[in-house]
Image 1 (cartoon, rainbow, N blue to C red):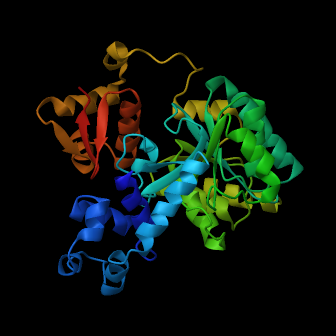
Image 2 (cartoon, rainbow, N blue to C red):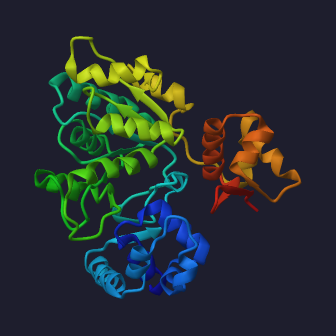
Length: 364
C-alpha cells in the first residue's frame, strides 16, 4: 500500500503529465524515490523545473494520496500502476497512458477482443439503430464494448452491449465518485456487474471540458479497433480516431450520405484513409481476423498455433533474450504498426512478455 500511495501522489502533481511522470519514475527507479530524490539531481531531468520539484518535496500530495486510498477502500475502487502486471496491456503501449488507472466493477481489461465505439452526442435515430444492429451482430465474437458513457452513440453502445450480454466498459471524464452525466447513473450501476468503469481522475475531481478530450486517449488505447458510428467534422469522436491511429490501432467508420452533417466526420476519415469503411459486423471481423468465439487454447498449444508473421517474430528471440520494439521492426522488415499488433497478439497468447521501455522477451 506504501508504493501505491506514492504512485497516486505522483499522478496528482499538477503540470507533471504522464509522459514526464514516467521519465521521473524510470530515472529515480520508482515513484517513492521521485519524492525522495535530491533537488540538484531532479533538475538534471529534462522537463523538470524548480516549481515542480518544490511540489514534489512538499507533503501535500502524499497526504491527498492517503485520503484517496481511504476513498478507494470504502467504495470498492481499485487502482493499477502502469508497471503493475494487471495494468491493461493495450494501454501499456500508449506513451501518454495514465500512470494510475482507477477501476470499479467486474471487468477484464485484457479481454481477447476489445472494441471502442464512439460517435456524436446528437445521434440520429438512424445512427442509434446502426449502432444497435452492429453490436448485436458482433455478439457472436464476444467482444468487450468500450465507450465514454456520454449522451448519443456512447450510451447506446453501452446499453446495447448489456442487452446482448456483452461486457462493456465506460471511461469517465470524472472521478469514480461521480457519474457524468447523472442521467446515466443507473446504466453505470448495471455496467459494474457486467464490465465496469475506469478513469485516471481522482475522486472529487472537478469535471472540466478538457477532461473529455483527455479521456479519449483511454477509450482509444484500451481497444483493438475504434469504430466511429456518427460524427460531424468536429467533436470528440474524431479526436478518439486520431488517437487510435497514433497508437497504431485500427479505425473504422460507418459512411453516410454527403448531405448528412452527422456523417461528415465519418466520410472525411474514410476519404483521408484514416479509417476503413464498415457496413456490417463482418467487415470488422474480416479486418481484425476474428472467427466466432472459441474457448482459449491451453498454454501447451499456444506456440503451435502462431501464424506466419508471429512465428517470424518469435524466431528473432533465438539468440537474444530481450529485443526492443524498433529492433524487432527492423529485423522482421515490418512496419511498427504491424509489429505492435502482432506483439499484442503474442502477449495475449502468452508467447511474449512486454517490459518497460518497449522491450520484449519470450515467455518461459
